[in-house]
Image 1 (spheres, rainbow, N blue to C red):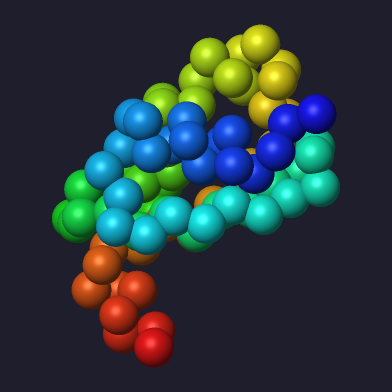
Image 2 (cartoon, rainbow, N blue to C red):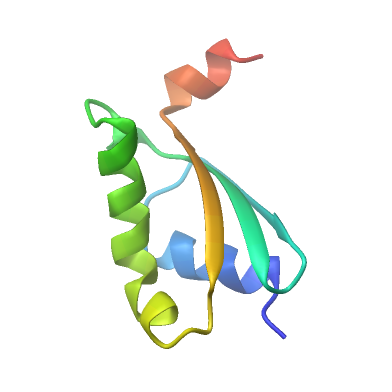
Length: 80
């Protein structure tokens, strides 16, 4: 069964993250991804960056659903 830790490892391997947390039930997952690489990108562009990192896992259907919140470090800090 797929674990949140596996998804965290995949994201961290392909994207510089200052904060990363994935939760889920083995089939559906949600992620908080904080990266300086998101600066200047729209919400859709940020999700596209993450989807590109996870592309092979989505295509192989190992990963079925991932809800994402993608923030810059500044945005994350302002949320308290």
